[in-house]
Amino acid sequence: MKEEKIIKQVSVFVENKPGRLAAVTEKLYEKGINIRAFTIAEAGDFGIIRMVVDKTDEAYKVLKDAGFTVSLTNVLGVEVKDEPGGLYSIAKTLADANINIEYVYAFTFGRDKALIILRVDDISKAIEVLEKENVLFKGKVE
Amino acid sequence: MYWDPSIEKMPLKDLKALQERRLRALVHLAYEYSPFYRRRFKEAGINPWDIRGLEDLTKLPFTKKQDLRDNYPFGMFAVPTSQIVRFHASSGTTGKPTVVGYTSNDINVWVESLCRSLIACGVSRNDIMQIAYGYGLFTGGLGFHYAAERLGATVIPISAGNTQRQIELMKDLHTTVLACTPSYMLYLAEFASNNGVDLRETKLRMGIFGAEPWSEETRKRIEEKTGIDAFDVYGTSELSGPLFTECVERNGLHVWADHFLIEIVDENGEPVGEGERGELVVTTLTKEAMPLIRWKTGDITIMEEEKCNCGRTHPRIMRILGRADDMLIVRGVNVFPSQIEHVLMQIPEVGEHYMIILDRAESGLDEMTIQVELAEKAFSDKVSDILKLEEKIAEKLKSVLNVWAKVEVVNPGTLQRFEGKAKRVIDRRKI
Image (cartoon, rainbow over all chains, first blue to last red; front, side, top):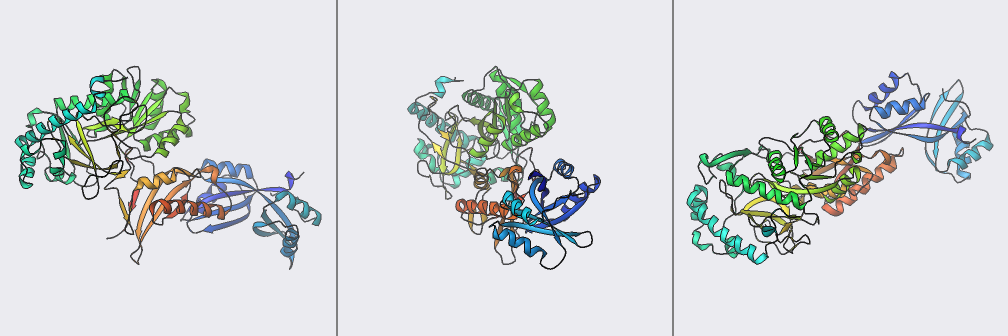
């Protein structure tokens, strides 16, 4: 099932002013939600927080109830070895299949592994090609 | 349906003759009883006998807001205080307060005028009318109150604010008509939907909105959100209060010409061509306590003299496009907040609340920022989508305003809501 290979990223719209990130993370902290991967795309007067958390639905609800503009986005997780060339092989695989990467961010885990979060323009095709390379993250984000 | 059919459908020729008679009488009365107008006429070298017909109107000088402030409190009155039965006052947000007074007959003309309007827009004695305009010194609440009562409708005199209560009573007392500012209606609709109340399931069928300029797009939004019919009302305290509404044709607001003589003038006070926009100037033909001759309302509109499909012969003014003194000058270009509202309302990705912020950069250049709320459904996790939206709005604004504005989308629900007249402009420019 493709569904299982998709990671739900929590995306939050925030105005670029003091205290906004604190307000978002405070809500998650109150509910005991752990952030596993996190990035902010900033664009002058606003930014978009993108994160992968352990309790996605709960995070979505608590932020929504607190009045944030929040959505869930389908992204892919790719597991690579934490060594030179790790990202390159993934990027090349996708490029060869003519799949565009819209954004990407990564974090390391364990001793020698990196998890790369990808948003692509054609997610089912991306699953197909990455599946063949056997790099798709299959675990659960916990 | 008409309130006073013989007047409302009076042939234009007879109406003009009536206006002429009343204008002549007004000029003589003003000269005789109003120290202000006697002085004004003398300064302008005008003898009341010079004014014989409507074509002589332009010989008379304008009356401006500043005249009311300069003659505060009683200098504009043409009757002794003993004949005045009520005062109203403006809050003086743009300067010193101004006061207006009414004789018993003035109140009667005001109530009768609004009665005609209410019937014209479809209110009947079977309606239950919730009046959410402020009661008190502001003319909105009491103006609607007495007109609705005379009409025989049922009045809920709830005044402005306390939205929770507004909605409760609306449901419990089966309100059919709501009168309030359009910005408050938007707020109330949002409040209702956040609290799980569907206004479509109430008996509310129409709203009469005014006291601030609003746009056709706002009308559409209100109607789509709430399922009611939204009507425009116009009036100012100097003219009495709320007076004129759209008729069911919804193609302009009928100005009762037996009591009010209107002109549209350009920035230099010259009459504009037919169908052109300009400032509304009103001469009160029958007001006793505080007659006004060529009163510059500051409101920008267009006049339509063609007989209306509803059968009424009285001229119409189109929706107020803005206020002459709301006009912002940004980099030397005239900008009306209503133009900005008009553009924003056509963009489904943003909400209906907005703020206009003006700054002056160190270089001396004006910078205009428009803040608008991102509609929930338009949120994308891609920065480029939101930047594109900001750019699209900025381009649309530029094409209408002829000046660039920076557009900032903000979180829904974060911009200020207004229960009375909205104040959407923050001017931080140091002159």
